[in-house]
Image (cartoon, rainbow, N blue to C red):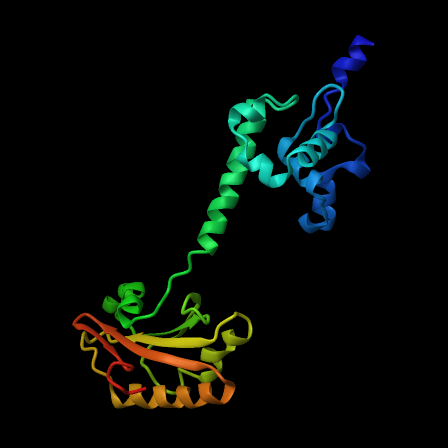
Length: 230
């Protein structure tokens, strides 16, 4: 009897194979797991009298995800079956989730040429020309960035297809174009103006607004919007 009790560790590996969350995750993906199965993977073990799935189910029914996230280390360790390691692991998990959520909700707002220049300042000293498209949502928040071409700026390299293709896969309603001048002089060339006009025509056809085209160089920057070139 004593040996039997000592062997009953109530860990995930002690569960029947059809009830093991890790195996289910590997075979069917994490989306297939119930909340208590995900939590059981994090907890790893239950305690004598309650296996890890039962412990996870109890915690979620008693506190829910939000309630659990608000408990302190001390409050967690006072729950039967929850030691310091499990409590610390849970607190770390919730902190990671919070930081990811904060990052997703703090998209940079590009509502002025200066902010675009600050974002792309690293390109001012590049030895080659980089043509970049920045994709914004209705709140002028950056939701995508694409390096369309690298090399001498020519119509053949800056194809509308490459500029506008991401529009159909990300929630963008407008675009800011940008490129650098390795010469150090930000003044737009005839080719720069021609390419911008061509892209603006395509944008009008598909219902997307090009807000600006900004040239960045060592000696400063030029905004087509400020120059009334767009």
